[in-house]
Image 1 (cartoon, rainbow, N blue to C red):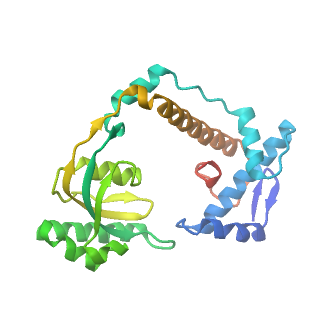
Image 2: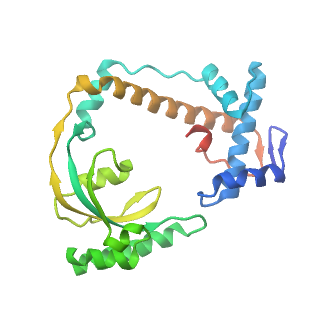
Image 3: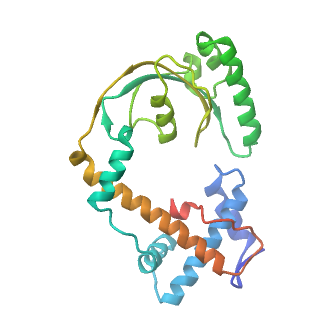
Length: 248
């Protein structure tokens, strides 16, 4: 049984929420934590005399009242632009291959990482020429049948963690470490790389400002929800933070 400031969250409510969290390592815990955050938002809305048609709209109303984030001015945009030049390029391309160790619900992530690291170490002993055979043997991605080939990739076509890793490697190189993404753990290698060009600040200023403001808002919302949790009386479930699909 979970209580939030004396409000009861029933087992039936938790079970109804669980299907939305099947990708989590502990779907029941994730479901319970999200329900706690929803109750806290409803309670705060009641304090503010706010109403809305559903929980999502109610959350937005509460956040609009309680959370303020600054606009990204030109100086902050330019500073980010200069500190992260690789994020503002076009035309960069790289041939890539990978071996995926897929993270699925209920799987022991530590064991999966250890297995992937073992295969990576063995592949480094065998050399780059063995990559295709290893991909066919170990990869959980359909590309494994083709030796793990992903083709020639451009920036923006991959999840950020994978993109950073693959473009950081020199040509024709086997990665020295696993790349972790929401899909699992990847062993990666590169082929031919084509250099593009840097985009001028003026052409990315508007979209960069929007991204910085959204990132700032996410951090502020995360902190705000942690404060709600910290100020509440919550029993029956651990609430270490406010990581939740509510704020994704």
